[in-house]
Structures are given as C-alpha cells and as structure tokens.
Picture 1: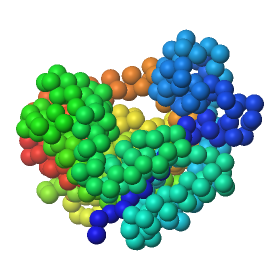
Picture 2: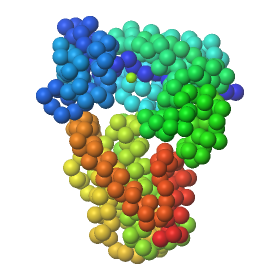
Picture 3: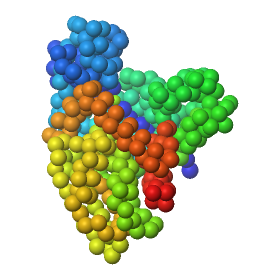
Picture 4: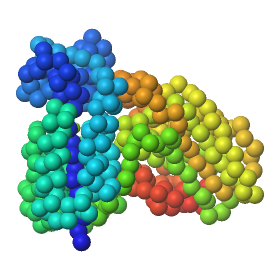
Length: 404
Ligand SMILES: [Mg+2]
C-alpha cells in the first residue's frame, strides 16, 4: 500500500489574513514585513504586489523601489497563530498523521481515511472548501505518493490550486525538463555548483548521477533519488505548539573526559536544534545543557539569555554552562531550547528580518565550522543537511571523539 499524502499550503498567508480582515486592503499590493524606513526584508506579499516583482525574502528597500505605491505593514504573529490553529484543526481532522511545517503549511498522511486516490481527491476538495467557507482564505493542495511530490504538486497551480502526482513516473515526467531548483532540496548555492558542471535540468541529474554524487557527496545521492521520484519519508506527527522544548542529545560509545571535544560536539548539537526550531518557526529564550556522567549521574544547567535561535548563539550559551560544571568523564551530552513563547517568537521573527544580523550570524557559523574542519580534517561543505540526521550526527561525533 503506497502512502497517500496531501501537502496543503496557504496562499500568501499573512497578506491574505490582513486582506480578509480589512476590505480596504483587498486588491492592493500589500507587503508584510519590515517598513521601507527600516532595515529588513519582505515576509510575504499579496499577489498584486508580486506583479511588481516583489517576493518574500527580498530586501525591503528593493521592494520599495519596485513598488513605491505598495502598502507596507508589520506582521501580526498573534493573529496568524490564532488563524493557524483553526486551519490545522480542519486539516488534521482528515489525517492519521499531520506534520506542521509552518503556520500555514502541513503534510497530511490521509492513507487510512482516503482508502484510495478517489477518496483522497474528495478529502483535498473538502479541505479547500472548508478552509474557504470557514475561514474565508484560500489554500493550494497537492496530492501525491510522497512528501516531495506532494509539495511540488501544491506549488504547481498556486494560488487556490489543486494538483496531483500519483506516481514516481508522473513526478519525473513533470519535472524532467525543469531547472534543478524545482527539487526543493536544491537551493541556490547547490544549483550553482550543478550548473558549473553543466547540469541544468532534472533530466541532467538523472543522466549523470555519478557526477552529482562526486560533486555533492551524500547530499548528491539524496538529490539523485529525488530526481527519480524516490522519497520514502513518512509524515511524522508534529504540532509545534505542543513542543515545550526542542533539543538534541547524544550518547558516546566511550566516555569522554576532554571538555574541548564536548565543546565541539555541542556545536553540532546546536546546529540540529537550530534547524528543528527553524523548521517550525519557533525560537526559545532559555538554553539547557544536559550531561550524564560516566557514573550515570545526570545534571542539567539552564540559562535565559536574550532571545536566541541561531546555532552560534545556542552554542555560546551552552558552552558558558559547560564551563561551570565539574570536569569528569561524560557519556551523554545534550542541548535544548525552552520557553518557546509567542512573545519570544514574535520578537525573534522580527529580529530575523534584520539582514545585517543574519549575515553576522552566518559569518560566525562559518568561522566555527572552519575551526572544526581544521581540527578534525573534516569537510562539512554540502553535508549540512546530513548532519541533521541523528545517525550522521552520531557518526560524526564519534569520528571527532576518536580523532581528537
Ligand atoms: Mg504558504
């Protein structure tokens, strides 16, 4: 029995909510994010604004240059969160497992409820209809046999779209002649690398899989699979608002008595925590360090820095905590974020819009990576996604332990 997966994604979510609640905004180029007088970026914008070339993630000054007549508003996350809860309640009622990806986006495993593709089509239409009738908002729905295909399908007919991709063959046929970036695991820098060896389309990936793997390592292997329509990941039940903490821990195969090594491993854990928090749009104010010593005695130490979400910031706080505990052999180390409150989320999201700060964090992260690469003769380039998998994280930490 293949999986039947629905990916549902709201159309221009923040902007649509504002337009729904204020008729004066309807039909206008509405840009939600920073104001043109501030430093920052576009969070989202109405389809009317998109016709001017404005898009999310764009510097707000560039947006203003393209669309000076636009209406610029700060986001109201409290409101979007409340609407999001209503949306997810509708969607979840049709799924055995629901994985919230963002406030306005989720994967639903409808295999059981649907029974077959026809049943799934009915569910897709019901989701669209109820979202419109009960919340006066439109969404785009993709129906498919895998997560990648479902996400691709929901993008296909945006806004207010519906599309289905029912087999790997159909997926391959749809995307073969498109730019490699259609595979949503291929970002800008990965695409540039692929172009540099003459690989431009998904077909090129399929024809030269060895070259892709040679160029991109494990990430390349994943990309060649996706390019062939293979993606067996399950929908993992996840509700971000239920998460009190987001953390990662790992147990060493041999006890570690070198705290410099622990500091380095903590950075990998911090990266994982950052990634998981980012995926669900949450940030924390508190950082907790957990250690289990060789004698099985566990301790936790916490601190409440200013709002903190980047790997470098989480790592810095965790290291400060580590510096204060007894240096005895350790078998387990963990780090987590807590106090994932609305207020914090809002502050941090706004902070996220600050590009300069973002650049600084990225630079610091790069420095930390470079130090690790040099110390352990590792090459993280292109392997970052893999590090987010527990197994890879564990293997890398073990490698570091043996080569310290
Ligand atoms: Mg959306």
